[in-house]
Length: 147
Image 1 (cartoon, helix red, strand yellow):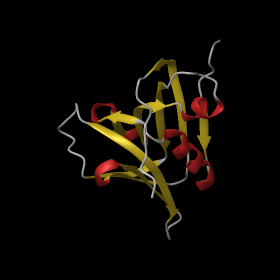
Image 2 (cartoon, rainbow, N blue to C red; image 1 turned 45 degrees about the horizontal axis):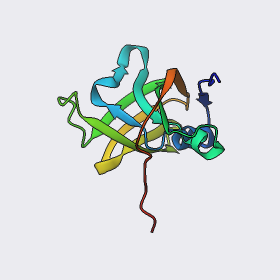
Image 3 (tube, helix red, strand yellow; image 1 turned 90 degrees about the vertical axis):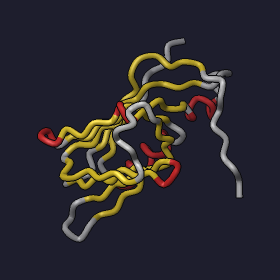
Image 4 (cartoon, rainbow, N blue to C red; image 1 turned 60 degrees about the vertical axis):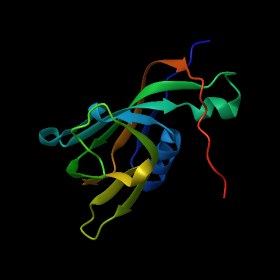
C-alpha cells in the first residue's frame, strides 16, 4: 500500500497549531536548518514521527518520514540555547507557538526540549509542512510523562 505524503499549509494561527501537532516528537539536526535572509525564507528538515498513522491503526509499526518545514516572508530569526557550531547536534521538537504583535507582524516560536527556541518574525503566517520520500520503520515510539 503506497502512503501519500502529508502536505499542510498554514495561513492562520489555528492552521499553525495543526502543523505543530503533526510535528510533535520530530527530530532535527542543526545542520538541516537554514535561514535564507535574501529570500525571506526559513527552512528546516525534520524526521517526523507519523502519529497520524499510529492513531488510525494504519500501520502496525512505528514510522518516521523526512519533512520540510518552510516559513516565508521572514523578517528576522533568532535562536536561544542552540549551539549553531555543533552541526551534528539534534533538537527534539515540542511545539510551535505564535502571536500577533502590535505592528501586525507575527512572532512564531519553534520550541524544542531543553528550553531551546528558534524565534521567527514574519509579515504573515505562511508555513508549509511537506513530507519527502518514503517513510521508514523505527523501533522507538515517543513516550510522554503524564501529570
